[in-house]
Length: 156
Ligand code: SF4
Image (cartoon, rainbow, N blue to C red; front, side):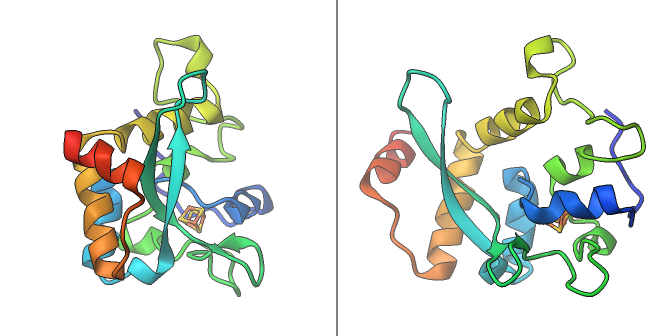
């Protein structure tokens, strides 16, 4: 999988940061370990089908003063995580250079769209590692997990 390593400052790339990108549990754990928990938030995701299973993910916050990802520099509009080599996976797959997204799943054509990437990364959080990082985030923020998420975590 080829990822985008450069920091592109074109309008198309900068405009993508209105919606915070999702990282893997390992990537987000590094942000927690580096003291960036106040830039992160807990979201609930689901299977996007008739199954009502939901689970928590930790991801960058939206800055409600400008409705952009909290990691987007307000002046330059560049990602503050780029130079730290800490840009979330979903962001590293979105780019203007090839005028389409790089897809995580190259076997399943139905998942070859930006939503496919998001679904695959969401699923990475429905794992022991994902639940461990959610727990770490909650402890660092003094938060208590909702009961249905606690049940899912404890069953793991
Ligand atoms: S983490 Fe960086 S690249 Fe991803 S949405 Fe936020 S500012 Fe943009």
